[in-house]
Image (cartoon, rainbow, N blue to C red; front, side, top):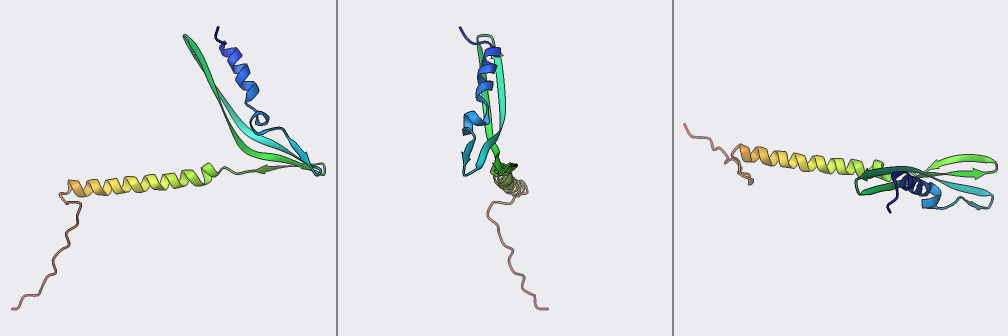
Length: 123
């Protein structure tokens, strides 16, 4: 017998936590560090089957020291570095393709022919 959507949701929801993925809070030398994550849970059901999945990503941690709690972000390298680099690369590929197509449609070949120098004629 397959689990119902409700049973699957409960099972996945129990496992979609920062503690389940990144571990329990740690205390050392009077400082406690608690991992913080973003979790997304998805479910789908169709006749004959039910499925689901979890996406958990680290966001940062809470540091508790001397009775004071402070959130520290670990940053998102994907958004800061990978996406802009990918966008620039895609732009360059599209620009090169556009230039290539413009040359082909105007009758130019891909090899450029330089104009011959003009010599002044004698009158």
